[in-house]
Length: 350
Image (tube, rainbow, N blue to C red; front, side):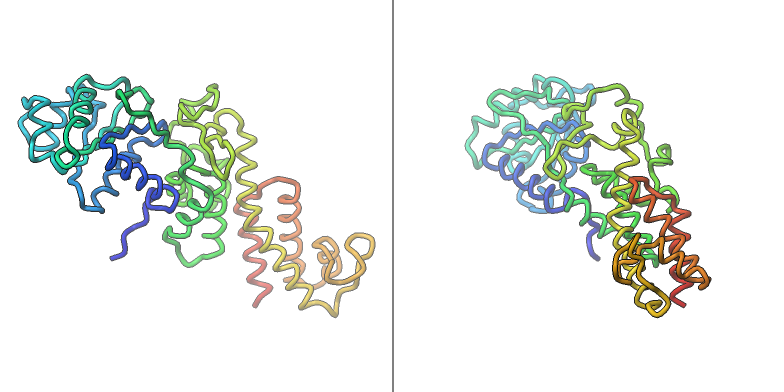
């Protein structure tokens, strides 16, 4: 059975995860600063190491109140009373990759453990990867590795292309195009956006409650920074998270939706303009004033006027003209209007 594509298996994220694991293999200790989706970063590291098969993977969550050594011992199946020295030299950990999820400053046991394994011979020590959500886990001799500019536009497109789809390819393409533009670098958000009903997925700006996970309330009134998890690079530019935009600049959210619609709908609308001209060429004449000297340049307005007596063409031309005009003026359209265009196109094709 083919493995389900995960966001961190995409080319950009996968290369980053592989690089961090390779760094840990060479230096034995790596600390990552991941202010956004830090739990998924830790999961991606564990998944990559597990697939390679060179180390056993031991997850440790320091969000709890237990000391590091107790949490590590429990995760490794050792006595929770084990000392740090006993843990460092335990055969169970000799070929282990310990992936720690952390908030706040480093636990004293974690800091000591990192120093101790750094002194051991290369072939006798485990590797340690720490994912720090707030960047507070600073270990002596180890710089923080920022989890930044990991997902790009091509990763979003690849992920959307791999999502399951039904028997409506045009609808699926439109939903994916909008979701990619809206989600930007938060590729995980693509799952929520593409799972919405069409009327919500095509205009997510009008149905925020259906896909907001609470970030709008947390980020409202906050300056966008990478450290707070609401800003990252995408396509070579600093880009705010869409839920920060929804909380602070809602008009910009509508523009993201518009860009997603435009990328897919405009070529589709143009395809039908050319098809109508080709089929109805004998019934058309140039409109020099509004469109140009030849029939091929006729726009939707003149087409709708000249073909007003052909019912199916009239319906299609008016629907596509209104849709094109809205998009041309920077306004996203509703699913009901897209549906009208689809139905008119099918009726004309019969």
